[in-house]
Image 1 (cartoon, rainbow, N blue to C red):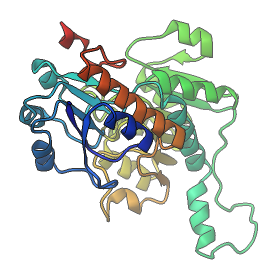
Image 2: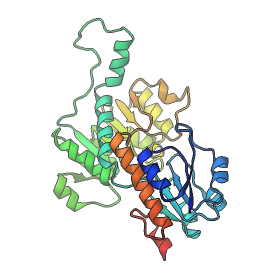
Image 3: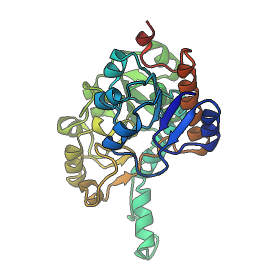
Image 4: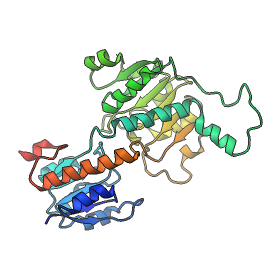
Length: 324
């Protein structure tokens, strides 16, 4: 029977399915991932690895797993995995696309709304006992309906966010590596270069994968192009935004607010400069955190792993060239 290492507890129904097929070594701590040294130690002798986006599966980890055949990532993005090193070793890499599209789009919209209308700031105000009366000037935010939404990255999640914008009567601009005429016709969105999008949008929502081309895609120059009333939302990857530049823009009120679910370093340490900003909504990377979505993600990751270990093509294979 094949042996696999699972780097964190996942839905019990998915674990039960996996245990019926293979021998499972489970990292039992739900909130703290294994260290890099622990990863290298625990993958020795395993044929399969089910990991999370918090696990750096680099060339060293892959080399330590001399019998490794399949890496199944419990995430859509796989920038935590050295896919080139895996491919060189003949190891299949899999992910869980599609399943979290609508759930993450819901959360992006929640962040957009919360930041625009100062929801978390207002709750802190109330809980602190500072609310004395209804007031015409109390905690004024910005309207969403009828405004301009800029979407950077028109993949599955970007398109889902665009669909939601139609209900708010918004004009939607998008920036993507290449225009998508068929989506423009379907959703009524307009292609724009990044600078134009940043200048014209009241809300900018990021939905691009993290690559060398998108690292710090939004920096000081880009933030300076945005309206002082604009809101930036990031549910993609933290490093798409230059954190230092964003903190400066928030503190100096160069933009109105931001809503963040992802960060360059996770978790945010105590005393991080973002925690000092009152005009940012901060969430602990919960974009896909609904009961139904996380359970489906777990089952997809398990299905990928089992298929690969059986010598079949996994349903969601990132590096199909490995099969040839």
